[in-house]
Length: 125
Image (cartoon, rainbow, N blue to C red; front, side, top):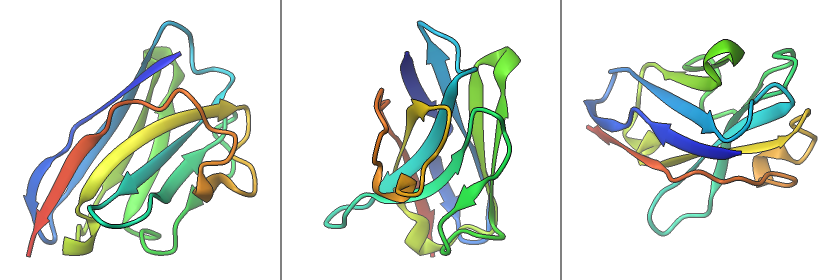
């Protein structure tokens, strides 16, 4: 499966963006999808993950209560709704796929493949 992230842009602090992770070449039905981000000079960080079942949702502590992950298997797309954006959310955001579950090490990107090209999110303070 090939993944493509989109929806990034420039937004003021407090604003919102919705990122999309669209799949091609295969369905996402059996895939957990994780969102990750990396800012210049920083390590990659797990932001959120949704299992194939759409059940237990995972969030980094830094985004809990502000970001919401969801999936629409009919559209082969996973979304990341980002509200109350902060300057420190500025980063390149990527999506990646794992088989069925996010796993306990999801935030480190363990067991994830099919890394898509990122989309840049820039939050002005």
